[in-house]
Length: 281
Length: 274
Ligand SMILES: Nc1ncnc2c1ncn2[C@@H]1O[C@H](COP(=O)(O)OP(=O)(O)OP(=O)(O)O)[C@@H](O)[C@H]1O
Ligand SMILES: Nc1ncnc2c1ncn2[C@@H]1O[C@H](COP(=O)(O)OP(=O)(O)OP(=O)(O)O)[C@@H](O)[C@H]1O
Ligand SMILES: [Mg+2]
Ligand SMILES: [Mg+2]
Image (cartoon, rainbow over all chains, first blue to last red):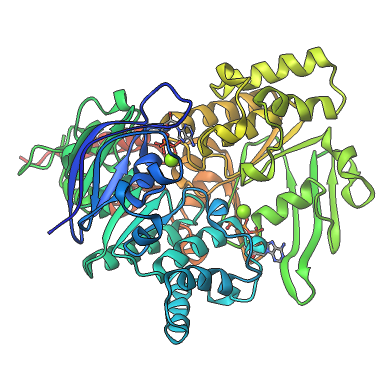
């Protein structure tokens, strides 16, 4: 089932000259895990906002083409209705915090109240989301007294608690420690296997290669490629788009190793291990 | 004299909930990374160095000045800190004013401040943006502005708290070059960071913080050889090192180039089977 359909999307912020998104078209199936990559200012965050309606409803600006999410045309649907289907974890967790709640627990409850979730249902959802992100100790803490990584964990937990059909995460692990970051990817993968559709912007190419079903490469507002991680990261023009392939692929490239079946470079630790361990010059 | 000396440092925000437990350390000329789990106390530690927080016990001595006896303003000419969240640092509505604020504040002349601001903005690749409003810039650009603001102050000690947040490949390369340049100028550079590949490629010395203590302190290569200790601290070795351990390649390679060189050398040494 097509969960997201984007057709000829063009968008320009008010008072700017260039298109932030330029003729972008793609389709995403329910339950897919989609990685979005691209250099700074490529348009990744703008595309995230276009999926949950902040573009164009909040930012205004010039808009063309269409975004359809679960059958709803985003430009013609109110944000509060879209919020029932699409949850967004913001690039900067500080931007996401409401600022009006005195504790982490109330901060998570705030999102659920807005969705009209009954009180009785709220507590188990909040508690399991906090446990999933390892912040259960901080329920009574003021959100602004958390460390950077703890606050980012709270931002992810508050969206997961809302149990959206589609979750959009804009660099959600940029402040997490290495194990925390791995745990978040595993948790999100588990949600995607249960049917949640996942869109994840990331600069950590090793994680994108390991966890995405398909990877979207954006540059200057255009969709350059949308294919399997192996194919996208084996392009020989990646540098032109400001992207370096995952480290494992770069090592294999340095040794001249390709996966025999596909002729592409191994992308993940496991695949690189299989090829490198048997390698003879 | 060491530029930074820490003796038996103890700190908590709330009595009975210790954050830093009896840390003693000295920093020398080696470029140094501080790594550790979320909540380990890294940001708290550098706020203590900068004098924004005062020790509950022990001493922090910056260029011979005990932070307990000095004001933040007096310390500011010795030590600069790039905040983890740029929004905590940026408050002017023109990029140039923002980057000149720190230098002017510690007594640089208008001309010197302008010159250093221009140089620092060029270093981060934002020379063309002096008239922009920082609030209109993206997170990656605001982070670079906050780095330029501190570099322009030209202090002897510079601390970066998560400098690579939101940076793409070229942004990270830019920041690597800035750190190397500052070290070459003889400055003491400390960097808190969660990107282990960046640590492997950039820093000579690495400290692992865990639950308010220093768990490991050594050359970056020594530290990344300690896979088990890193795991306990919720960290992991760099990707290159992970593949090396898995494939039994000796010597803890830290970069793609080192791995390829070692692997080729190992291949060349393999006895030829007839
Ligand atoms: N609120 C805004 N007002 C005006 N222009 C904006 C705004 N937000 C983004 N832009 C512009 O739109 C383009 C795309 O920006 P966007 O933030 O989507 O990129 P990105 O790929 O998310 O970048 P990054 O990796 O830095 O997060 C850029 O040219 C940017 O300057
Ligand atoms: N203002 C505060 N009041 C109370 N506790 C705080 C405050 N600021 C931080 N803490 C707590 O102190 C501990 C150390 O926080 P700190 O910000 O130093 O961690 P960190 O190592 O920088 O983590 P991160 O990698 O997430 O940035 C954390 O458990 C945090 O929740
Ligand atoms: Mg972005
Ligand atoms: Mg921190």
